[in-house]
Amino acid sequence: MHMRATKKYANDVHLQDVLGKDRDGSCIRIEDKIPDTSESVDEEVGLKMQVSRLRDAIIKVLRGREKRVIELRYGLDGQNELTQKEIAEKLGISRSYV
Image (cartoon, rainbow, N blue to C red):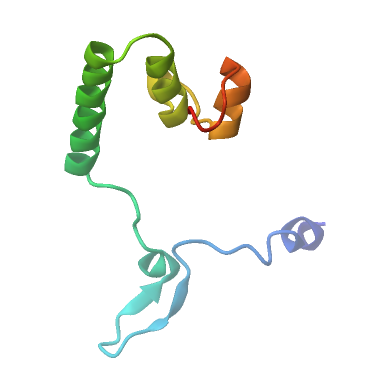
């Protein structure tokens, strides 16, 4: 029964599994080979500040439908980004205006 229960886990791979050794004899693990694509905290904060300044500028400069088009196109206010076609259909305007 134990053999049957552990058989389904036989092909599992874990991040800490050793792939081999490097020239220095150090173990190389799967987690060492997966690139870290996450942004640094500084980049994330900087991006949020830029978005906030952009949002403030949009509020000050644009009005009505133009403001709404920009909000929908770039997913401001926590919305999903929409395509030009989706915005045109939603607002009843041409894609070229969007």
